[in-house]
Image (cartoon, rainbow, N blue to C red; front, side):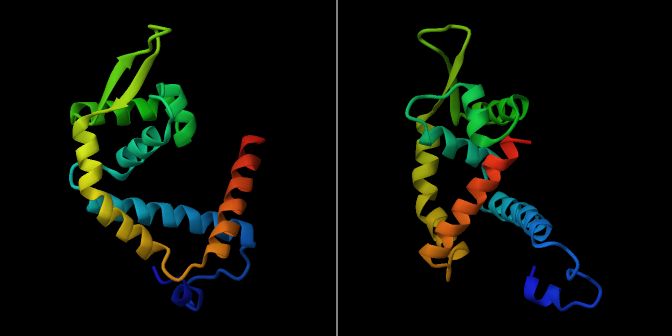
Length: 156
């Protein structure tokens, strides 16, 4: 969507929306559009499944479902469903925790690692395109703003 064009569209009235509400709507719409685009890019998995892989990858040790849920900002049930689909595709495996057999840890498989390596260059190109024309200072400000909003949400 071309927001500049939409702002001047006589059938839509943005003028009375407070900037905070406008930003939340913009972030929601962006998330929807990004997810749809990413789902088209990956033929084997969805964006949410790939996001789970990214989050597992940034963990220093194989995370539990609860730990992964916290990182992803999603419910235990939703993350479990994502992981079951990834497991059925051979991308993750659930292994018992060495110290607490009640816990299961999530580990990426060689199949997943090959998939990530195969798609890395194109993923980086797409990310570069999304952030084209946005300087580092503005990006840093955006990150700080969203992180503050995230902390504020946790206090609700």
